Length: 257
Image (cartoon, rainbow, N blue to C red; front, side, top):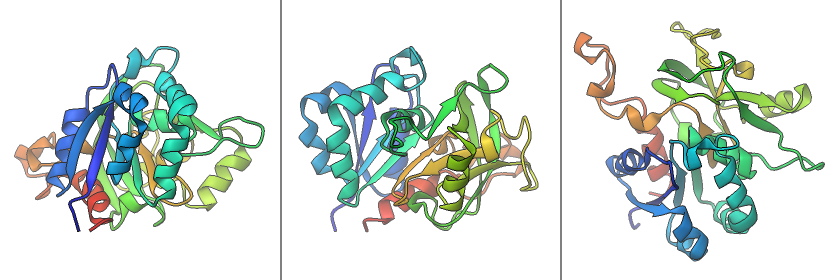
């Protein structure tokens, strides 16, 4: 089969698109960075790709709210295109700002019957930007991107990453369905409090997927830990043979192999 191709969608303020493209290529795929305006003008471009990735950064300066502007543009101009993309069995990944966009566009978690989003990413409880490394564990086996991954150690860098469901019933439903697929933990793998859970997310949620497991968003940055030397203590021998984040991209590429 031809090498799976990833469309890395960038916008003004995106700053992790090159690293994310490199991650897909390191995983054996091909990647092309495409500006949002180009996709708005030629939405049929998406047909030539198997994976869509919304990388990290500060799209449109995070004006109004993080990911809000790109999310709105998708809702009003690309909603049908992206839903056809997902319905065709393809994959969508949102990292940090990309996760915020996926939630605000309704692509990851469809709006409730009353038109309200089932969950959002709110300001960190500390009310400040957090930049640190965190321990993570997977929850269930629904998510394609997390196949054969039990735990990871990755960096986070965000101000609006606190996962909040609209109500307790929605949170319970998402949890029971296995869609709250990535959680923060402490160093021992137990329940995380601040600073191990850097933002105060409900149930320590660090990432979530849709009902199919093929649309996934996470706040940590897997593209920032691909090689052993990316680990903050690699000189002390704490890094593995490869970075923990690489497996996420390998899973996406191998899904089509």
